[in-house]
Image (tube, rainbow, N blue to C red):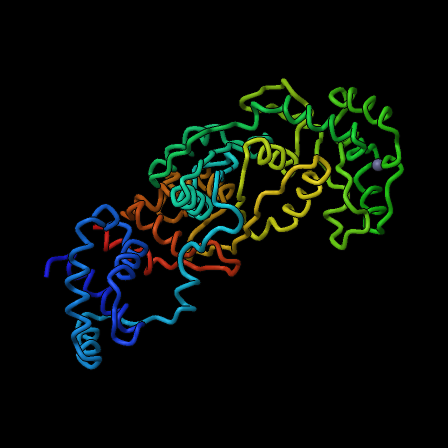
Length: 397
Ligand SMILES: [Zn+2]
């Protein structure tokens, strides 16, 4: 048997075992196409081979089939186990799937970013959708300028190419426009309370006095916003002041930032908060599905209030568990600190969890891509060991 015949043979044995000794050629091809992506281009030649092999296997007794299974190390796995592996089908419609990878430009990409980027890329490929790369640079403190170039390079290493690229720092006027619309609808208000006073009220489910100001008064304050100092006022989105999670009560949409922005300089002082710019952009960019870590569950809930105020359809939000990796420093700020102090040799220091460090260890991008795809987007946490990575990597060398 050649390679292709052997793979068909194994799938046919498995199919026969699942169906009382009688395999079906169509089902065998289906299982090969779904589980052996490398063979998809050889679908045509697999058909006749599957026909012949299935006919042969179906003539064997069940004992002979079992013996063949043992010989070729074919095992029937429990269905349940299988379903938990890999990327499950996306909920909702699969027409016009639009998804995004949206990192802060705080450093080069690390394995945690790959955990976000790979499933988005893979789903878009599966459903013929569109992948957007959105650089979320609305907090000057979290911008490391070289990252603007490093991020696309790292994505390219992973074999991921975005269909469209956006920088949130280009979109401030859009955010202002929607902030104003929210104020006009009475769905957002300018809050001039100091942080501690507001917190005290909010934690006791009490609205602050600003919440009842008229739209006119709010617009007047909004127009003066960019002459205020940090902390003097914020724009809040109205939610439920009795919400069981205090963090969700009337969250901040806009604030004053006085730092200089690497791309914008001092052009703007009024900056959107992450939940605001993310929700506006996800809507405007037509996002159908949003994948995010489960540490963002409360953020998804915050953002839903904005969608409701604006009358927008909410995308499908899918949350996934944390990814742990042994012996690896994952924090970008700690990595940067260590590089500046000389503790690490650079972004590719093998003790770091950056993709550059992983590449330097001789790990192939396909290893990371496949491993992340296999982990999928389940809610439970996952751990990756180097043993597993090196094991998978051997297949690609
Ligand atoms: Zn207030």
